[in-house]
Length: 113
Image 1 (cartoon, rainbow, N blue to C red):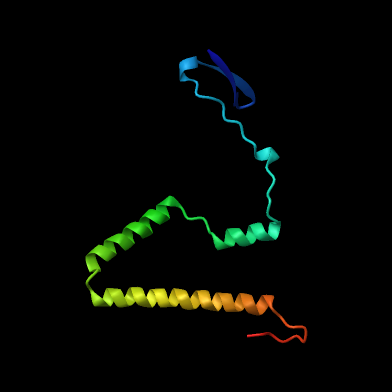
Image 2: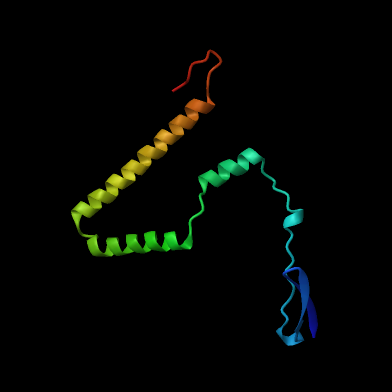
């Protein structure tokens, strides 16, 4: 038997677990974690990779899959998908241009385009 102390409210409860049912003890190392990235790098990385919930992912992936199956041969649907891709590409290009403009200022105060 393995005895494990579990925090419960303001006290501790001891749980007795058979050896055959005890797989091991998981210990958090959050207190000793050291981030290798700077604070600025951590924020930029998190903004580049926003969290997506499983619910959102399933809804969008499932919806896209159904629409593809139902309307794969429909030319209007194909054109809409191409237009969406074009808008996304234009948005990414504009975003990169703004980043370039704000990060690469010349000594004379002008911006290089």
